[in-house]
Image 1 (cartoon, rainbow, N blue to C red):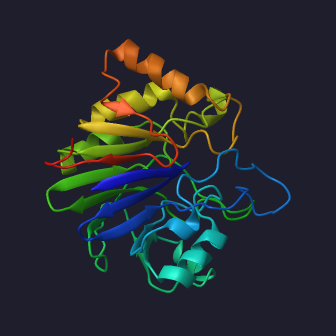
Image 2: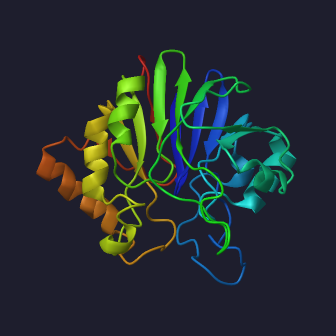
Length: 262
């Protein structure tokens, strides 16, 4: 597999069984409004027009910084991909014109994808507005291609589910873990990990390698835009985890995993 960081929680994952995008987000604002809300501060690492054929989209939950209807509409118009998402999100994504949609419950494997994709738990919530909180499910994904296994966490606070995912799916070759949008802690702790908790999640998962995400693209919370990466470096040093085991990619940077990867 080749994994490319596009920005925030959007990765391009290229496999022998097809290409997929996680939580595709190409809009300028993570908001229902075009003139207000968190504005993109870093351009996508791969321009939309430069994307290869996209066969599959994994959508972890319905928050605006992860579920961007204009991007989904554009992907449908160009690629007509299959989309996998947790229960309760089908109606929303179909409103963007996406028709090949499969909804999953936690621990359920997709029946329609060319790759083995399983929805796994996350500690988070869902909402598009003030009246629909937790009316749709959220989660992460295990992606399997041949002997390789990737865990995409979606958006999550720290919890016991990481150890349970390890019990069911070890070994995990690569984990994609959120490290940003964590301050103030009294407000964000239940739904977003800070870098220290992300390192603990990496250890709980027993992942061979991890990549940080959910940072540097939108100013969503109170910490500085560069703080998650700095905090990750400190957390790795504190736990004596080599930085090569848990890294961040530059926007547009790729990582190859597999037996022939250098």
